[in-house]
Length: 157
Image (spheres, one colour):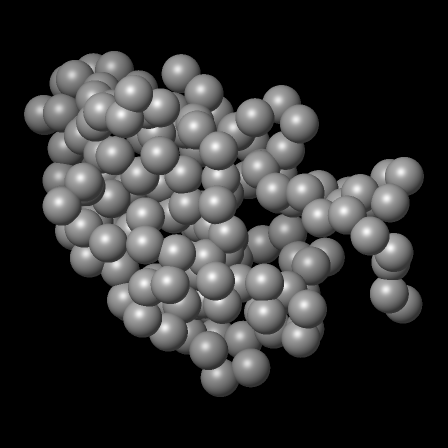
């Protein structure tokens, strides 16, 4: 199932424009899974860092706290549109079910003294409902084919 619309955390727009996020960086990006009881879908959460988020999926059943490194990360620019996207992260449930409502993306680094700044979040099922992968099955967060985030406007060099 494709993820719902991705929403940028409020501090992330500042991080994109002030150089905190290196928009050409293709490493250190992670995707982490969160439960409905948490605050991952609150765009103004705390100071806009991974440590502010609550109710991450437990470190079990094939999921590791902190999430998974994102691969295939790209920032491309074409026709006045900059697009951020990545390859769908996949977890395999092992010994139990992986259950989550949200996926948050953050940069797993300290940038301009900001530890693990958050970029964006999505609801995994647009119903909305929890998404579940039972033991032995995969839990996949599929980004939209058009990209996760798009920015329009003139390029600044």
